[in-house]
Amino acid sequence: MNNDQIAIKVRDFERRCRESGLKMTPQRSAVYKTLINTDMHPTAEDVYREVRKEMPAISLDTVNRTLLTLAEIGAAFVVEGTGQPRRFDGGLEDHQHFLCIKCGKIIDFHHPPFDNIQLPHEIEGKFKVLRKTVYLEGLCEPCQNQSTIKEPVN
Amino acid sequence: MNNDQIAIKVRDFERRCRESGLKMTPQRSAVYKTLINTDMHPTAEDVYREVRKEMPAISLDTVNRTLLTLAEIGAAFVVEGTGQPRRFDGGLEDHQHFLCIKCGKIIDFHHPPFDNIQLPHEIEGKFKVLRKTVYLEGLCEPCQNQSTIKEPVN
DNA sequence: ATCTAAATAGTAGTAAACATTATGTGATAG
DNA sequence: CTATCACATAATGTTTACTACTATTTAGAT
View (cartoon, each protein chain N blue to C red):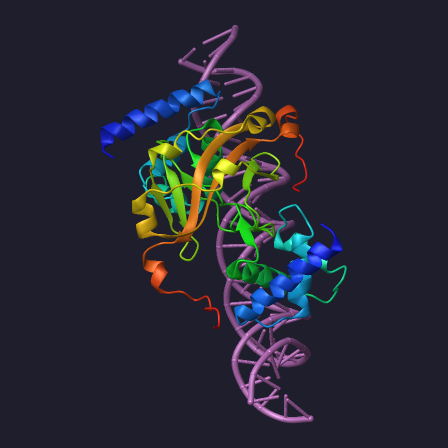
C-alpha cells in the first residue's frame, strides 16, 4: 500500500471517528495507520512494537484499547477465534455457531445448507482443511435490548 | 441427553482412544462425560469446576490437557475462542480466513461466493448479525508434513 | 505379577486482558 | 483566543488463562 492510499484511508478513518463522536488523537491515527500498513493479523503487542517506532511514549494499554475501539466503530475487526479463553464443544453433529460479541455467549444453530460448503480448488489443493464452517457474530436477543449490563457467559 | 445415550458415547470414546493409542484413565472418562453432558461451550475452567464434583482430586491442568487431547482425536473440538491473543485485521475488503491450528498462522483468502451468505430467517429475526463469514481451520502447507498426532494402529 | 511408557497432580511461571487512577488533551462554546 | 469539560492516555497493579516442569502414579502389555 502506497502513501497516498494510506492517507486516504486515514482521512476516511478520521471522518468515521468524528461521526462516531470520538476524538481524534495522534495515538489513534498512529495505531490505525500501523494496523492497515500490515497485511498480517497483528496482536496488540505486535502493533505496539511497531507503532512505538513513530511514537515511543505510547502505552500498550492505549494500543489495545484503541484497537478495540476501531473494532467497535467498524474500522477494523477482531479475527474470529481469538482473544477469548479456549472453549470446547462435545457436540459432533453438524452445527454452526453464533457468537454474541457483548455477553460472549455462543449459540448453536443448524442450517443444513451450511453443512457442506464447497471450497475453491486452490484452497483444497494447498491446505488440509479440517474444519469449515459459517461463523456469525453479533448481538443475541437479550443483548439487543440491554445497553450496559453484561450477562454471564454461558 | 439420557444415561443410555451418554453410555454409548462414552463407549465410543473409549474405542476411539484405544484406536489412537491412548490409555483409558478415569480422568479422561470423567472429563469427556462432563463435556458431552453440557450443551454449552465450556472453558477448561468450567469443565474443571463441574468434574470436580465427581472427582475432587483432578487437576485443572489435567482437564485442560485432556480437552485438548479430545480435540486432537476428534472426540470434541475447540470452538471459536482458541486461547490465542486477540488479533486484529484492518483489511476491510471482503475476505475469509484460514487458521493453521498448528503454527497459528492466519491466511487470508477470497472466494467471492462466500461474500454474501444467505442466512435463514429465524437467525435474521432473532439476532442482530454484524458479521458473517466462512471460517476454515486446518494445516497450512509447511505444517502438513510435520504431524505430531499419533496415527491409528491397524 | 512385573515392567514401562504414558498420564496425572502439584506447583510455579509467563503472558494477555482488564481495572484503576491521576494526568493530559481535543473539541466546543464563549 | 482561551477556558472548560468530557474524553483519552499513561502508568501501574491485578486477575486470569495458559504453559512448563517434576515427582509420582497408573494403564496396558508381557
